[in-house]
Length: 171
Image (cartoon, rainbow, N blue to C red; front, top):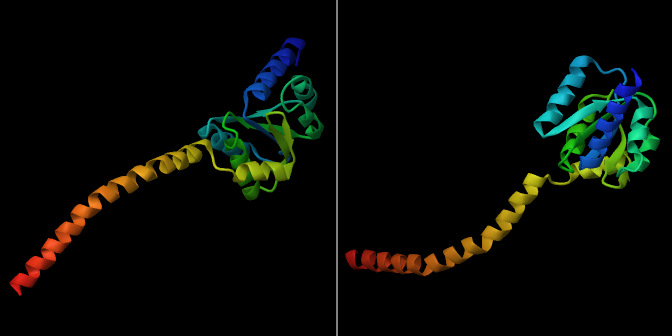
């Protein structure tokens, strides 16, 4: 790899570290190409990605970026999983690590916060952006549904009373 290619890799990694909501660092030693393709596909489905790079180039790219302390995790064969959604990559990696014992999560970064493996697991257990939006919408819609039910209740009660009276007269 010549100098120009290394500069390109450092620039790409710098953009990943600066723009991602979360970056997960893991060892992948012993994984097959098919297993790596599966991980890539899972991350791509949530708008994330996987990047393998030399540790030294990644350390250079981390200088001055959020999560700079993550450089201490870069030992051995490491892979970066990232996504703009602060939870998506952590969820995919956590699930994948349970299925594949060769994929070992070392930690990661969420903004300026450096995460250990337990931190990545905590982030993975958080609801995703879409789940949070759904929860907020349901909280906003609940009072309106209650009001509609309260407005319609007297009419339903009157109809029930009239039906009961009608049945009594018929009997």
